[in-house]
Length: 254
Image 1 (cartoon, helix red, strand yellow):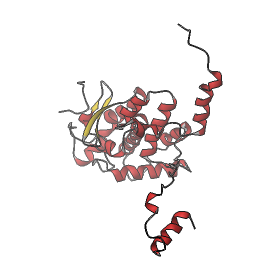
Image 2 (image 1 turned 90 degrees about the vertical axis):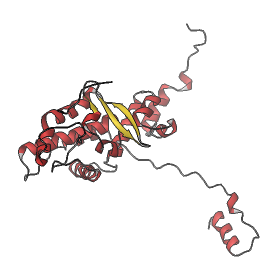
Image 3 (image 1 turned 135 degrees about the horizontal axis):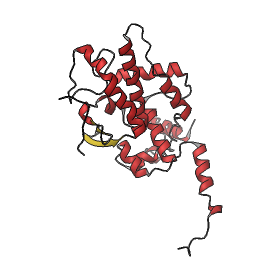
Image 4 (image 1 turned 120 degrees about the vertical axis):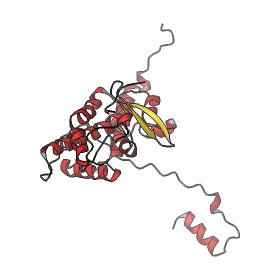
């Protein structure tokens, strides 16, 4: 029996006259380590995006494949949340500046940049394939308030549909021992950028964190990164240096 449990028993049995456990300081529980993706995992996930549903037409299958890759690219490249991706409208995508207008927590809106590498998947889906899904519900003309990502039925994609997509990707890739989820894509973006030397302040804004404390949870999550950074900044290698000298265009029609 622990000391805390024993004191609780003494209190309940009225052996001691007053509570002493209120003054106890509980030990801090170490944050659970959640392994994130590797570059090899990312390649496997993109390779597993092809939709092979035989009951669908070839054009719809190609559209879903392009959509899946665009979803992965946006998650990995920008680190936005699942709810933020599902809520994207066509008017939230600026193709000239490669920006997303994202509805963040706290009812805030923020411009989130997308790299050229990440944006090419989204551009390919929007310009070549999205219409194949939209026409399934009779939407021949794309309007600015229409959803960016559509389901296999042509309706705006839901949180549940994206979660099921990641379940399928996990089965196809065989990635084991780690979560295959939109949030782990977000973790991969943050840990990779911090490890590559991007400013924590920039990563904080990219992720929509209100404080750097939240962003710091993603820093130095692996022993390998700690080893590399310690090797680089070892005090034994220090040298004496004291004397050394918006408005863009979108993807809607009207």
